[in-house]
Image 1: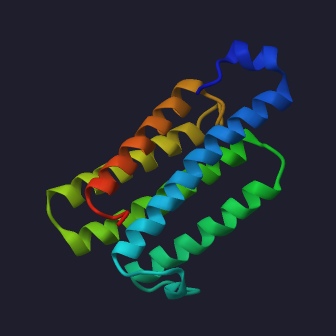
Image 2: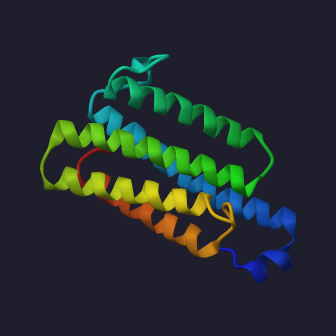
Length: 162
């Protein structure tokens, strides 16, 4: 569900912020679940995180750890569309990193499609978080939501959610 500028103005700032929190939060949680699934599929857990990551495994594990912290902070803070959209963007980037690791381990066209979808989801989440609207643009948010749904579908097809 997207919020248009007119609907947001009529709903008021609190309602708009809460609705945008729901939209960005759902996308962030979905991307985190994709990241965890891809890392699990590749045999990587948060316990492999390093303070200064030196390889892809360490970077992916560290990104998972940071994304989990970001989601905790999201749940504990007041709605802020710009910050919430950045959280979704960062978690989508984590999922893209995890997808690169899983695709490298798997190979094949299904894994490659899941990686492409993860990269697209990360790019569209970045677009939704950036620009003048900073998480408030309904069209960008809808595009990011659709890209996230496609990324989940292709990750499932690749067998990463097993």
